[in-house]
Image 1: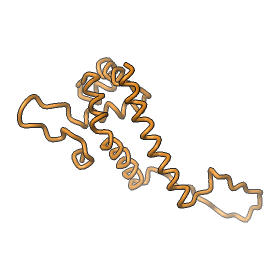
Image 2: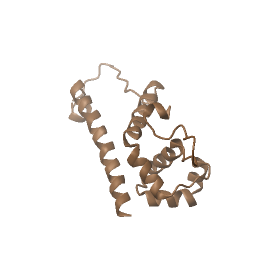
Image 3: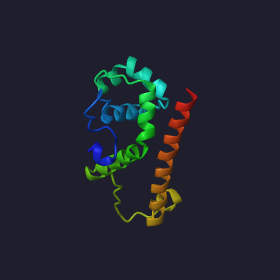
Image 4: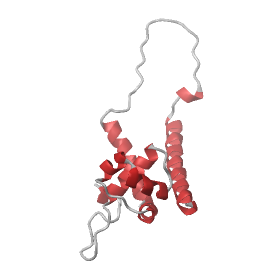
Length: 147
């Protein structure tokens, strides 16, 4: 539910021309993230010429200002949608867990920091992911300002 995540414009105003639904603009940003297109001007061009994005948005092609304003006005809601997606993937068991089997073999093991997890290290990793999302959002904002 996009309204529950905090997106503005889910329910259109009674007067005036209705704005783009946040779901359409979110699809554009997800497409941009997957295809490493950060600039709102480049996303505008992609929405006008790319068949995949035309299909995804139902041939809607918002201008760059609308795309940039959506990101600026709904930054926290976009982050909430990303968190909700990860939670959904976990509930559907789309992230696999390592299986360990013991067969009596003896070999030298290395317990590297990359493979040793504690509650604190998992918490740090979650904070790193949040920081990464924040860096990506500011990179988008910087790209919008420079176009």
